[in-house]
Length: 172
Image (cartoon, rainbow, N blue to C red; front, side, top):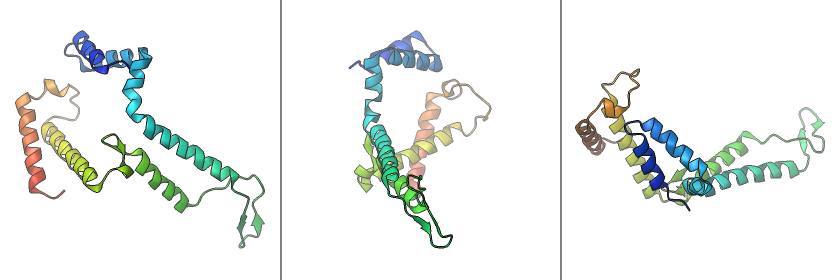
């Protein structure tokens, strides 16, 4: 499989100071090389396949379910081959199963990781969100410049330190 890092390096070198230009160049390079595309998306193969296979299996199950009586209240009967609408509880159960399979933490489906791993992952995301909020607090929302043109490395380091300290001093 094609290594992605050399493609990323070339995109950065070819687009100095232009993150979006580098992003476009990298994306084009990946999609132009089938091996690179496979490499870039291989970590999502299993969760994506699991999601679509689950959906297809559920549809097949619904199509094969025998016709049933709609209910005594209206004295009507579903005709054979009519699509059946799953109950809200059934849909909710499917959604819960799907999230356990499709929400990925550290490259694994949520349902396959321990509570400790999930909490560690969530704590890191909360810290990251605090960091971004602190770093961008003084910047106008209509300022569309890249952050590296607005804040310094020192600003970012201070914001990360504050975010980490705030996380230790509060219960989120």
